Image 1 (cartoon, helix red, strand yellow):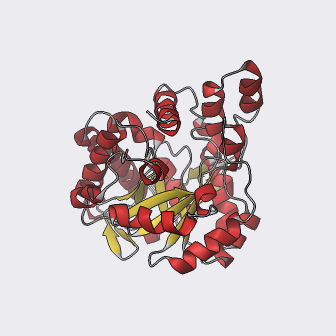
Image 2 (tube, helix red, strand yellow):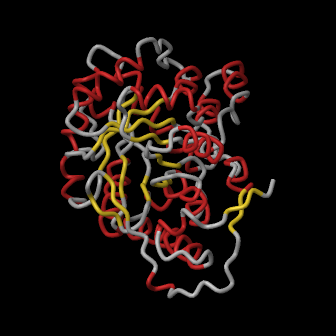
Image 3 (spheres, one colour):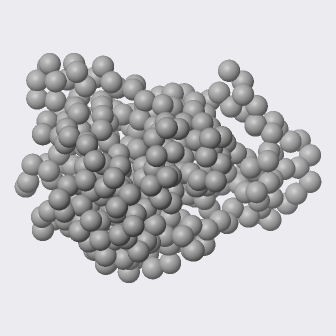
Length: 342
């Protein structure tokens, strides 16, 4: 097993054990509350949650967010996620494809994944540090071709890399590499943080570089600083990492700021999204799509049916939130009264 694959295995274990889970209140969604509508005057069963992404219809505005792309057990996880996404009509973003690109361990990240999910938006994934490397555009193309993806996610994880033993420490030229990749690829590019949020200034740079969509992936969900702290080989390295366990821009805060500053840029809200009410709040605050990863990881280790059951709960919660705000569609929900309470 390669060092990189072992690292991915460690990440799975730590996230599954809950050792790096954020507090849901830290996302900022708890500061908002919908005004309840006691007379909705609509039929719950008539509520439509349909939307579209990259030309494909979704039955709900949900993205099964990037989880894992390394360990051998990730093959089963990715299969379960793809089958559930296809059955429910949801989008899916795969985990980092670096291991698959640099070794023979593909973790199920092949065209077989597309065969399991032929009708949904499927998003490939490569790290910004790899994109900025000498083989960056080659990696980007291969990542897309590997799974016949509809778009490419480039993930930003400078904090994690800074704290990780052997992490990528030189981030010079990343923005230019992203801009070049946007021009080189035939599919849209999405850029996401991995749990520390996007600022307006960074988002504006990415939008100007031609990025099609941004995932705020804010603080409040899995803390990758804490993950690296759990993996640290020395007490000193652990102390450095754990000081950053709650570092970052809360998801709701990043989402609000970006939507206000860049209203035409499509946004994905992820990072500690706990349930369908959080999804509803995120949509009202400006999200086009809402992503969840760690919340579904345990079910993904079990079966596609378990993943389906998990997201069916989230979807029904979102539907009830629409009902109790008098919203018959996502467009209506985006106009519902949402009050800041703290």
